[in-house]
Image 1 (cartoon, rainbow, N blue to C red):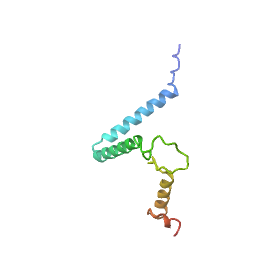
Image 2: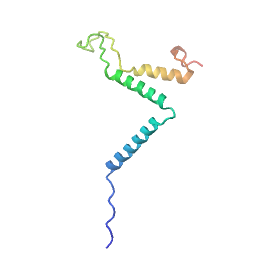
Image 3: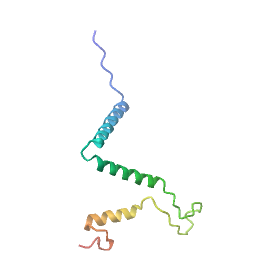
Image 4: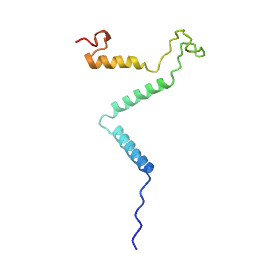
Length: 105
């Protein structure tokens, strides 16, 4: 009699195994002696930014006021997508953040 064919792992188990292996590889590279300190500084800066993003509660000192009633209430936004677009476009086109000369060559 022949042995039954080996059963393969389900796709979710293979995916989880690959993810764990990749994370372990990233952790090894993070702890590698060459360049360890700059990597940890960058990781700490990233953690601070994420913490600031998640704890942003500035609602213009009026957290209970209704929004959308036509009154301008400045809210500390979590990221102004339009401004980020303008900055990226200005940097790519002419290398500065002066927006009045973006499309002039």
